Amino acid sequence: MGADRGADSLLREAAYGMTETHTFDATPYGMVEDDRDLKAEPVFCGVPVPGTDIAVVSFETGEPVEIGEAGEIVVRSPSVMTGYWNKPEATAKQLRDGWLHTGDNGRIDEDGCLHYLGRDKDMIKVKGMSVFPAEVEMLLGRHPDVHTAAVVPADDTARGQVPVAFVRLRPGTATDASALRAWASENMAPYKVPLVEVVHEFPMTATGKIRKTELTDRAQQLANPS
Image (cartoon, rainbow, N blue to C red; front, side, top):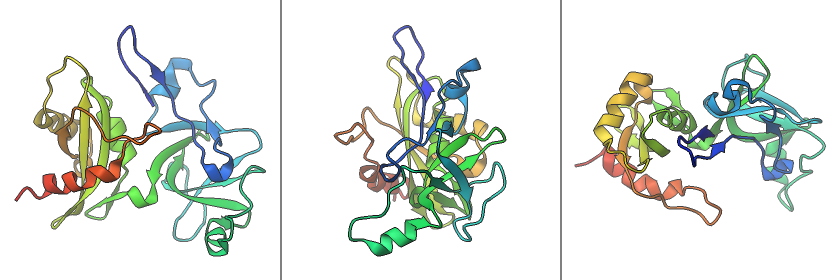
């Protein structure tokens, strides 16, 4: 999600879905006034499509959380799978009382719109505080020189974990890692400020996604340079 700048730029927006729900569950379609669909954060996915119910619940209790509070995204619709083939335990874990428990973090705002925060297994814990990689990536994306950011965790003896951001800059810019970290310190809560490394390209999958698993070793080296 976001908007590149320039005459030949590309506007992009986010929707939400997964294979287990036939891939398309929430959309920002029609929310173009003042570029709400492009500027909302962290990842604004709009409202559920017709026939689909989306809620956010506690990972621990399964009970709905307050509006604006982060929790697990659950989905109910005629398109939700009936189960995993020959995997009854996995089916029972994810399908409960008619709701698919996605394992994704998210929140619902006061307008009933879904914000996607990333997979629960990707969440970073800094001194007990939750840091969502998608949120840090979106915040870094507001810097005028940042083209793409990918955030992964690294272990840290003092804080448990720290976020590490790999950043690709826009062509013709000269910002460095220390300047980006200083900018982040002014625009993020202290526990969200990442270590930063500027890269020229990312390891990519065949479908065009960043291979974050291939960044984790380098992230750990940045966190523990000795």
